[in-house]
Length: 177
Image (cartoon, rainbow, N blue to C red; front, side, top):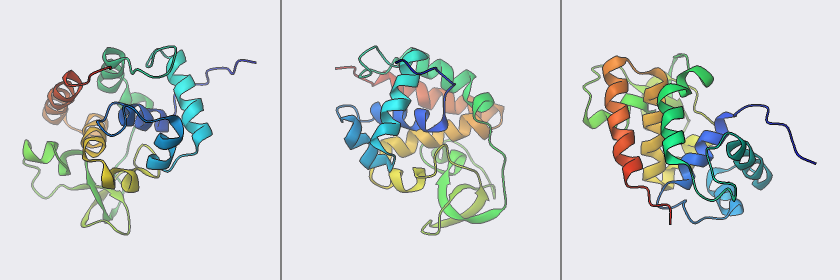
């Protein structure tokens, strides 16, 4: 029996971004699940939703980079909007994290994913998935991609334009082998 496609979920984006990292591209679903702190069945279901949305191939192994880029740039902020919250301790994201912080002077504006083990204070924004602050600890490329994604979700026009360039640079290096 085939499941209905009931729309994308935020963890689908996290899983796709993990699959295009150097550490994630050859991982099996169970390994992706372990590294992201998501159940293996949720990874499988997410990849099926992504297959139906044509964001991965029919074998659910290769990410459709052009479709992913289009979705991130043009749809992410509408499908998974974010609202700044209170100031908390957390893990830097968006314009407060690499690679964005190296290209943008943000003044006192800092964005973080709430996390008690975080090393900075800033305006909280909800990560795409609750395990993101932990999942990025050992995968700098995933961290960069998620910070770019958050910039696309919350950034101003200039910040978003820079995020698009950074995203394109990373995706250009994606090798589907």
